Image (cartoon, rainbow, N blue to C red; front, side):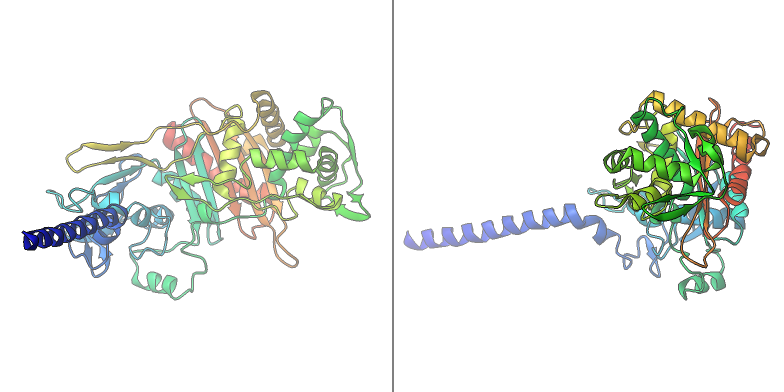
Length: 460
């Protein structure tokens, strides 16, 4: 009897250890199962370390950007489509970490916790993006051999229409791929739309303008004097023009540094911090679960001269293109941003829908009244400064930026804004690194991209 009891205890201990081990295994399977299944040594979906069996990636019109053929991953036959969508689609080595081949690999190969990566079709799931490859091509051509990024999204739905980052390379070319791996194309694996930040320059003046509108009831009567610049705290802030007595409409249109530096000081640190953070600075931003680089604004414990520089978009200000595009879209959308997304849908090979994305609102950034007033100021900048003829048939509201990035360096050229059109509700951001003036260089890129978007999306 005693012997039976000992055996029972031993069996109970063994069973307990087995159950505990099984529970631990199940826990690790749930948390790490996809990593196990997607290890490059798994020849069921990888060939020589590269994914080989996965679903297709297409643009919004069904143009195939990447798919598997006979166990080999193929990209689009058109060179410009391959290069312009590379940072969205991603490479096969995972160097472009934000690309769909890396960030959405489980969905592409069809992994689930029940079947692993096994599917009857053996080809994974298909991803349809919101991108328009024809618009992306135009953006790539407009950027040319200059580093930078172009982002365009529908501020009513949140759909990313264009996301192009340069430099890029031809994924189908062995020599091009080798140059990229050897570092000859500096920063080629970085998606500058998601993973970079830039000094916003004068594009930040729309944030300062919004703060000024809500701070001062007499904002439209408030006049500051520009004498080719202004002296604050004994230091000189230069301006590109000598604007004399200037109001907010003229200051936005002609990008008067003297006006906005003085306005920022009068608004004060706390209010400037509040409105920058409402616009998304110092906040986390995501697109399809992919985290973007965080924009930065901080004027706490600063002098008036520092606040002045910050109010006109310099000092330590840094903006991420995705965040800023969302903020500009919020101005267009009455103060409420639409959360941006690029993955439109995911479907199984049999057509079964697995995911369908819909636009979601973010937290209100500014009031509708303030948003409408800022939009009018941006519209005035196009009418008075940039030239509405550069955006034929489009009611464009915009702000340029020529961001200083250090002595003896050509400034970054920037241009942000949106189209006021129910048929074409697009917001845009353009950054051309060391490109020069925002109005001419980045504005010229924006003009070409918007014309292409109008032709593709509206048919005009």
